[in-house]
Length: 520
Image (cartoon, rainbow, N blue to C red; front, side, top):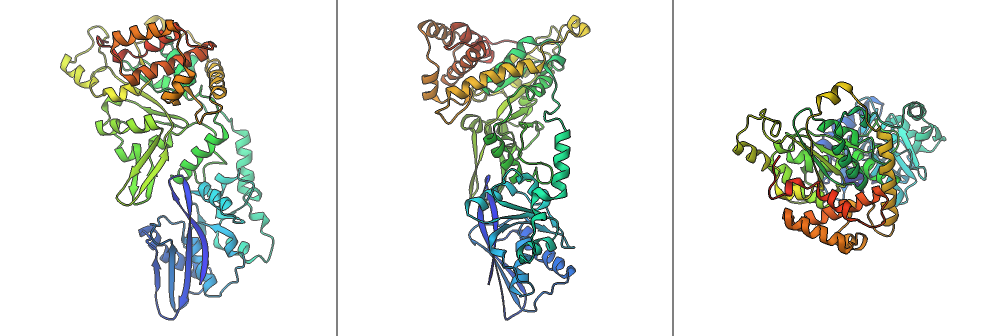
């Protein structure tokens, strides 16, 4: 019996899978081990690929077991291990290096090896379990180039895999760092600007108050919603936010890259880790599974809340999204993690994102703009009621936007560039990083109750101001906590060591939807 080491991803981590191949008396090829349809189809692909390369399929009973048997195996990544098992078990090649590597790959009918998802978690598993390295499809291996403490081979076909495992010659040219694709992508990456093309703040005319809210949100990683008529710049501001966020740390880049690797959205596209913060903008008609994540068994794929990890999840027209989807955001926003449960499995994914939402104030979009609104009071109330209280409680800053005055549009006076705003945001983030050096968080928005009490002490003057605000606005306990966190961020931007009354007053000004006498 021959054993080949493979892997399966559960969440953003990989677990070991052993492909066992045994050839005995009898007839037929039997695949066992709770394989899904994609894995069962691999037999026909594998047999055809082997025959195209001149290998013979033994006229005996071939038993292929994917262990452990209690765990569902999915995807096409087991093609390559199965083919190697048949070759070794039938004695057609001696493969002394077979047990040294963790091997994954999809086979083409001509013996080529195609990309698979989950390369990053697979390499991490190989390092953790003490394997000599990994053998992966060349495109998938490009994701893993920063894991230089293990051998990672990027292969294009089955012949190259056999060359590595036979150990008759030096396969160093197949190491991912020595391949032509690596050299090509390295040159392209050096020529390409490392900073993505984002809309610049100076291109957005007016809306100074909204820009201030955006700066506060980015400085403290706070959630924010824009409410205003069409054409007021809600979407433009949201897109500009990505350009003022600080660069990702290596730890953040690893987590985000693993998510995209597991989801199959980076294979063959990324050169190393993802270094730019994600900006996800799903359509308002997206399903619950698309936003939260879903799938069958333990083969659950991440949704938009996870794909936006360490970045921005922009939900335009929030009031038009299905209510079940909007309400499902409560948990991820609060816990910064999403757990998807099925009958036989439960998978958790990270979901630490900045929620940026936008909505019109009414169905026609023009409420508050003179007599342009054609909606009845009942229609306006029903529309705004879609933005439920529990969700609004979890959004730190609520920004109202008005149309830009004609004179400003005509003169097109440019405001402050994104680079200046980004500099202030980065400085505030560095203050928070130092403040939370002994905690497991890095931004003000992530503080829990204990941390808020510890790091946000209020002077008697601040307490009096806050008491008056709570009494006047009728705030919930969660909204009260969010005002304090936003106040802490405003103080960081201003360079204040402690929160001052002006910080609390400004933070409370971004809770206009909580007012008892709310009106646009």
